[in-house]
Length: 176
Length: 260
Image (cartoon, rainbow over all chains, first blue to last red; front, side):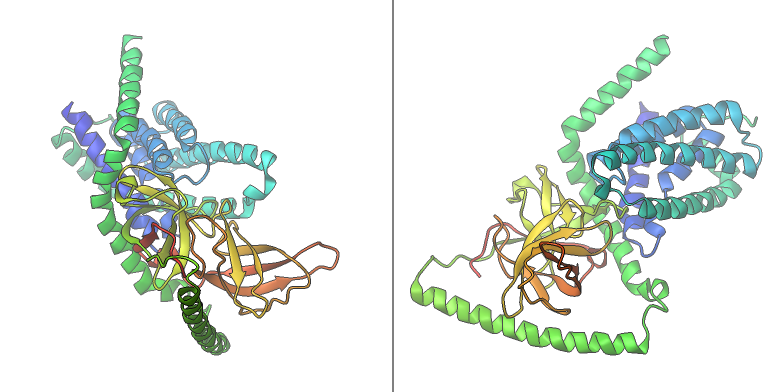
């Protein structure tokens, strides 16, 4: 129960930073997918469950507060969480930075593909509602910022692991 | 199997709890979110020159100065007209004079995609807000309208959102009226203008007052381009808003229609 409360508070803290602070910054910085980066980090280094829940919860949060990039973000983020958990468990290693970056790329790819599928449906109904150039530009910058986020998190992996372990937040995953 | 069932039940219970308590969660989150929005907005307004460096040339500055002067004249004319209008209404006693009621709200979060321009504010139904209320900043610059209202928070759709249309009029000689429709981006399209209407670049665009809740005279933007094709039934124009909501963390919601 304590873990659930800590997890919820941590998620809300990250959601506030992403949707209130980052969203108010200039340039392309509002597109920084902070929760996705932390989710991938958790999946790879801490706990598959916590990482997947964090990513899935973000979709629900965006839909509840009407901050979506595309409609029905819950579906996109749920699919992304499942794909990320699967790839972190069976495909990518967490020993190297490359493994973490590859897992991040795969996760981001699934998110964008599912968003594209939803936008495609919108486009089939009302073509003027979708601008693929804007979507591509936002995807490009969001992807770059995700990689930067993962690069920033990776060097502190050991320290964060110890901190989270001490705070009973999540159990550690073994290196594999 | 038992473990998965437990996870699914827990998720369903959490979802129900979140949906039930969403208005209250929004209220509590609002207290934490506002300072973050203010911090981010402060950083944006103080670092814009980095991101917009190179976009301003001396020629563009001169054009902007000229535009400001032109707008000042237009504004002066508008004020004079408003005063005249007010006097006429008083003399004719057409309607009882009503006063503008405004509720100040803090922005608590923002959408980040150009596909949708939404932001949430920390005032809701309990504060007298209703769907359709106009949201303004500064001295009556329209930035959006309430599209969803909860008990203690509300979602505002920006005027540049593709799904928002606003009846507007131009402060030109004909007082042309039309519908300003948002786009995927930071501009608006002005549609359904008959060919015999004479519209020009730099014409000011204000709300026409033909929409419930939205009073006339709220500043929407300025005409930056006009497209007139004789083969089309109407002219179209591009409106550029004079302010960007990303530069503000405080807004005002007009909760009853004034008599301007």
